[in-house]
Length: 511
Length: 110
Image (cartoon, rainbow over all chains, first blue to last red; front, side):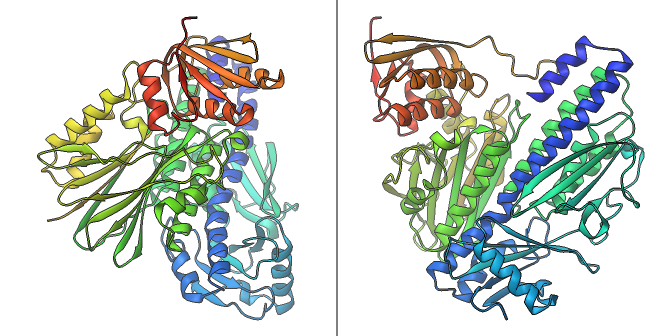
């Protein structure tokens, strides 16, 4: 919508003076938007820790359960949020109850500092943040407890880029734009998280935004010495990366590509059209960062996923899919859709996605998972609800136990038939308190199970049944192909021109 | 590319009161772009003390999850909501969402 307003201005005003003024306004807008992005990124740090703290409370701080709950989130790979994590008891700050990943930087601190931080975290009502910025491997530490009076704190350390200066390659693309992010109130070297210039403070026109961030705040300073305020959008993936918040190599590649593609603006309208495209790119980058970047590989089973942004994807959407190994014989399968779009919808999506993982890894059945999810989102309070299909696949018996909260029934397809599985939908998540959901048991046999979001089958001007029939017919025609090809055919046959985002998850036994 | 602000035709949502029931009549599509307009009408109805809201959907040909979210939040705020004359595909979306019992359909000649 902001971009729409800017574009309207673009076609009605064409003088250079107006351009300059527009650029300053853009700078302020982009700075504010970046602040919103940081706020929305916070759940991607907080939610995995919070879920882990809740699990610790239930399991009396069992170290193995803690390590299993966080295993996929801790490690050196892009997309893993933490390099190190630990479970602490505030009652005994001398050493953690369990650790996972690299050695904790927090343990380099004097005992009284560690004690003070843990005491503070135990009393805090929000995510407790400790900057660990000294040394050549700077990190941010985060701690959270399940509830007031909880016995356990879940703690994670997210890496910052080793050289906090000049992270972004110097090129013409960034000649007009620089930025610096600080933690806390101070804007000096010891509080710096990341900057694009070797020497601070920033010169030229600056715009400053203070963003609440857990129990502290971030200060974002952006300087624009000439035109092209849109550059900040290109830098957003780097900003997020700097906070250890959810970005992957893929998004870094997007950023580089944008940098290379960037040209000096030839005129105001062209510039703003480019901003529009970049906004769409940022939305897609954020979306991808919130989805799993790899799938489990259970023996004998093919899994495939697709995510396609809709044509109106100016803003990040709330569709997601997820697959997680529960134990040697069970696999969690999830497809969900938070209504609406925007950063709020996306951050609710992230919360729900991690909560499903946490509940399922505790051993909750699909219907129980859905009932518990209702405590996290409320349509009256949040303005959004979510539809979720939650399944547990039994690898030994080739059956899937499915519970459905207002979501579309999944398709079962083989070369001879295509039929919807017959799950009975209960209300969407966030509509009523503690709803009950029926569980359907589906035999997969040699069929592929395709779960999807409504964007795949919903079109203005036709009933949804037409779309469901189209999906069944396209899938059956491709049913003998490998699963990846089958999903490609479905995307090619149905996604073209769809307005809404689409998430698809497919599973099939190999023989 | 200039038309990126979601410039659909203007959404029309009007309020009328029939006894203790407030009727919100919507024309066109209830989607992400127009849901806010319908929500504003719901806010007005709730502030005016509506005990029951009927959405007259006879002239609505498409509803998405953003639209459904407005309908169920109206249900949560008033306790009683019905959908008047919904078209077949609107009906299906409500049924698929598992909400047919909570957002009952009614047919009226009016």
